[in-house]
Image 1 (cartoon, helix red, strand yellow):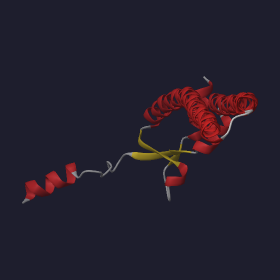
Image 2 (cartoon, rainbow, N blue to C red):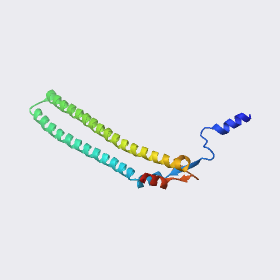
Image 3 (cartoon, rainbow, N blue to C red):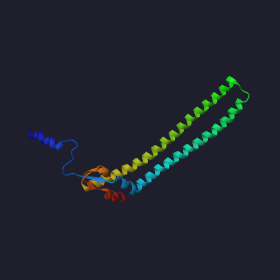
Image 4 (tube, rainbow, N blue to C red):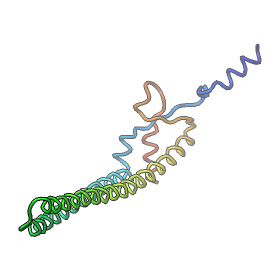
Length: 168
């Protein structure tokens, strides 16, 4: 019985060591104060702008093509009646549907490419910050670091020390 009690006190999963401290960081403050995060956020906004510009360009290109096809269709329809006229109309409807699908795929491909680049940049920045937080936590003897909003009571605020370490 004594052995079981000893094992429980040593290895309860999820239980922090009694002498270990918990730290926290104000992530919102870090994201506003650290140039790396500001640059990553700016990079993300630039990717959004690039996607909007690309989509607008593709839309303009599509509208121009539609106008050209409409003129071509009107020329083809001159003097045509009945079934022949329906076939011409259907041919152009089909062309438009195919073009819409093609343009949508192009825009989605561009969106995925830009998102991938933006996420990669943010991930690199996050990893960089994690390394700094880990180093500061080790220096301060902290075994667990949380985001400030997750801490109800206690803990050591490591935000300023992380900022100082990031500037070095």
